[in-house]
Image (cartoon, rainbow, N blue to C red):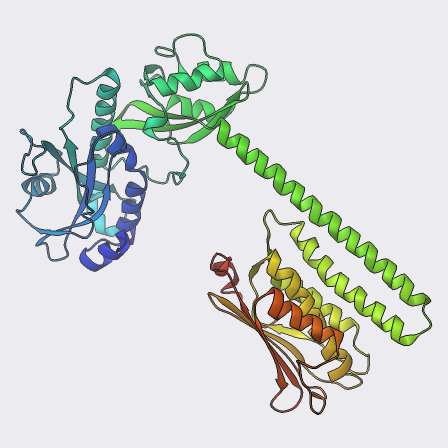
Length: 511
């Protein structure tokens, strides 16, 4: 399905600033739909002025919907829906007198012109605003009954918000983006007057304040002072709370008392140029914050485990290195030194994991440290300086650990055998796609021995590489002579689709 931006670019004359305003409106118009108990459809005039295109749609969570099918992308001609044309031409909210029964269900139709307040853009002219489209508000009246005080408050608040949309005052220009987990109408709603006193409290909002410790009635109370008394009796008052609780600015904050955490979001109501009050949405997020704290504790525990594993591996490497120094047999000393490097490559991965909040690591840093280790073991006369070309990006720990060992073995093998006692180049070239990682380790050394067979090799290092690549990473491994001399090892490693692919792209380059 085409997005709002796709439809706007294809069919309308909206510019970038207009689109940003539309995105802000659509990101927060669930509030208007829920307060109205109505479906919303956003219509934008076509480029040639011959009709309208629907670029967004929202259904209410507080009442029955009118449109069971999606209408986004629908194009209608001018005159086909008179209320839309009237709202656009006369720049006012239009309400139909009698319900529409054409679908078999009584539907009340209203239209709201969408106006953007400009910041001095030339296209706005001296008026300082632009009209961008029309919101069609359709209410299903099939379950109509005598409205309760809650419903009357909702409808009055919806009327005020609709007027703010028509005046270009909603969404709020320059306000912080609304979080996905922000309170919704059904979570709890307070209506404040201009002085910040509560004129209505929904049952859910009142329950949230009861859990904070409120024993008196909330209606008639000054929200800021009441909340501060409940939550900040023995400590300095959060200044952000007073701004939110007064309803003067569109902000969010959280308060906590007695183990209960409540989130508040203020929506100032500014109609006809003056502030008439505010809506404050309330949500009890106690359980959500408890789970987040548990996850943070688990993350810290996992990082501490990785840190301790790294320390233990470094201790093992130190013991092996100490033992190697006491050996008089060259072959035994060399075997222990190789084991030290293998253990060290694993320790590098765990050290990186100990600094990250999840089980993913930026493998470029690990690869560079492994490459530096290979450079240290090369003979001074060989003057081998390995380098990396391309970016590994972010990898899961179950891929990073074996891959670090594979790189250690291949680089060490190239330095000690292919490039021993002679200068040459050693490169690690990386190419990452959406579902696989291609790595080529190439050197300009002596090349492969006569009759080399990967399947029959007795080299422990190559056996480790083959086991890790094929058996653990489910990848493919090939070793062949390099064109122009030397050896080229190619690894093809499949990546899960959920890997952080986007974090690895764009950083490819020469290191």
